[in-house]
Amino acid sequence: MEASSVHAPEGALDSRRRRDRYGDIALKWITALAAAGSVALIGLIIYKVVDGARSAMSAFGVSFIWHRTWDAVANHFGALDFIFGTLYTTVWAVLIGGPIAIAIGLYLSELAPRGVRGVIGSLVEMLAAIPSVVLGLWGILVLGPIVHDQFGPWLNSAFGWTPFFSSLPSSGSAVFTAILVLTIMLIPITASISRDLFAQVPADIKEGAYGLGLTRWEMMRGVLLPYTRGGLVSAVLLGGGRAVGEAIAVTQVIGITTHGLSLNVFNTGDTLASRIASQYQGAVSFLQISSLFYLGVILLVMSLITNFTAQIIVRRYAIERGH
Amino acid sequence: MEAASIRPSLKAHGRARRRLLTNRAAELVAIVAAFGAVAVLAIVVINVIQRAVPALNIDLFTQVQATYGEPGGGISNAIVGSLVMVALATAVAVPVGVLIAIYVSEFAHEQVRRYVRLALDVLNGVPSIVIGIFAYGLLVTGSGQAAWKASFALGVIMLPIVSRTTIEILGLVPNALREASVALGVAKWRTVLFVILPTVRGGILTGSTLAVARAAGETAPLLFTTSIFLNAVVTDPRQAMDSLPFTIFVYSESADATQNKQAWAAAFILMAFVLVTSLSARFLLSRSERKLRGR
Image 1: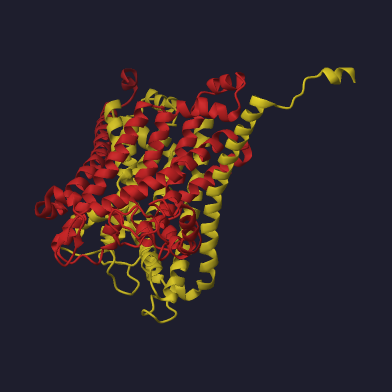
Image 2: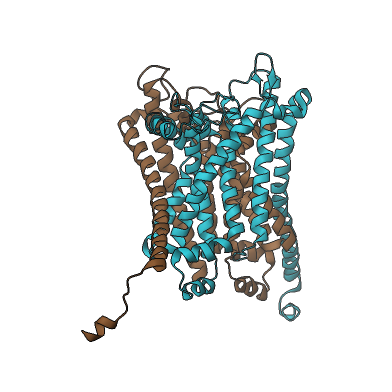
């Protein structure tokens, strides 16, 4: 810089330097502002949702969480049925979808022939691209009748003695249909994360395992799964987070009527998200709208906990990528 | 002959056989799982196409909705509404998202970088129905519904997608490029805007395309922000608009067979748009990654 100033005309260089100094500062602060905005946005979301819930909070207090009534006439509202519905559907979806997704991850990283690996991986991820409202439409008009006519009678006759399948579904709209739809949504998320996790396991320890004469499955069970345990937990959690927050497809297929804390998956049900979504036109009183916000607060807390836990686990087992 | 009789058998027995069978079974489970997922995708897509094709016609794109119970009519207002709202959301979310990514990858200290990335991940995990009531509480209460309010909610959903993809791709830009630019005496802001950004155009396009695909299919943020509208083609974002996802949502539970059919047709249009968009995003991403890695 010093040397070049000898040759360049003083004024031009000064003004260019000044512009560059301002340019650097301007770009830094504009981008910093945008970044700060994204952090502030989370704060604003939390503030606004809590703010909307304020009058329900002062009317019902914390007992809102364990009250079961949702009575628009008596203007008394409680969240327990919906919290239960959200947790119950999510647990089922995770129990069904989690192992399937991890198996898909194993297939994609270890078993699939090189040529089809990319194609099948992309197709599985495409499953996540189907809009939830389309999956819901399919759920109510195609899957629903199958649940009613096939799954229902079959599961009821085989497992009717358990509390889960103790009655026949009265229509295609049932907790079971919602669980299937949520499972379909959860699988691509968890599968693609677990595939990436398996791909990051160092090749030498895999080869070491094969060198000891282990079969492929023994290598997966003995090396891949223990090595990626933390990551897998968070992959399943992230999938579960999707299931917790899904509103539209669940609203379409679950029937939007609770049977209390029934374990029977062939009953209709309701979740936090689907209750909010289904009331978009039905909420009349101010207190009812505020109660919907209260449900939103609970939902937000649940999904923040899920996501934070997943992020913390991911960072703890830090698999640094690129950066 | 002699040699063959003393050669040990290569067939597994006992324990080894059991291990091999277990392995075979485990592999089979994984293969069934993967192909099962692909089959579900195929079934959904085929079902939508099968049911949509008989309902597809020109009226769908040129007419507004018929009165309940009457045949005919179309969903032109929903198509226009979706286009306008997603375009508006994109116009805001993409520039802001890219700015955030620039800060994170070019300016921020390690600690700050981690916080902003965490914030983006958290934002990405907020359920879209919560974004919906947030937009309702922030913008709709007291002043009524409008399409731009829905666009705002969609923009909030798009933001982390754009940012995260852009951050990833900025991380692939070789440091030598930055160093070379600085060594030539180029100021940092010029380096970022005129050297770094042009090399990641593909990545930004990918992020934006992914975000558009996601936003186009979102229904939950629209319920509280733009669900009461005129039955006419509306292009003024200060008014509420119909949209494809909302039409599907309402018509899927309708008792009217015509509306059911139109729900399938709308689902077909939406799904075709979303799948084509995400496929092209995937293509763009692999192309720009290859370009950056190969350098």
